[in-house]
Image 1 (cartoon, rainbow, N blue to C red):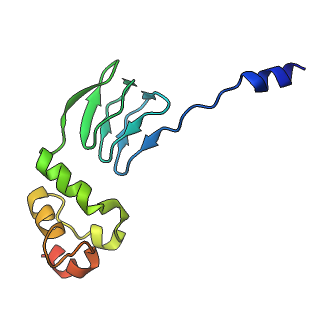
Image 2 (tube, one colour; image 1 turned 45 degrees about the horizontal axis):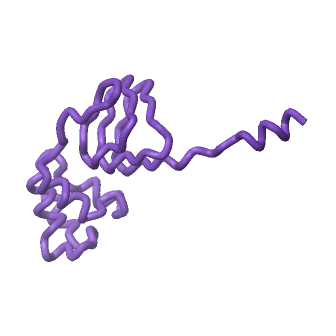
Amino acid sequence: MIAATFRKRHHSHPPTRIGSDVWIGAQSIIGAGLTIGHGANIAANPVVTAGVEPYSIVAGSPANEICKRFSEYDITCVLETVLWEQDVDCILKLPFHDINRCLEILTSDSANGVLPAFKEVATE
């Protein structure tokens, strides 16, 4: 009888969505049903009570945005390339130390949305 009563009261939480290339610090508390955008960084020990925008850095209790990792233009470009769905071997050849060069390669006409088309360019 107790088990049946418990099952009736149990409610499932809405799904929490975590994007690609997200870093979540130790002992983070993230509320149910929130969306953590691609490339976000969450510092250690925060209480995340609202969704986190792509490529944002958040910290605190409650978590607040500290800054963006890149400019709005760069974020838009990276999101449009859907980089996390591309071939890993090709991604590793991109010049991530230089965001401008990386975006130039990713958005070039020769890339045409498919990374393998510019493997040679990425190794320069």
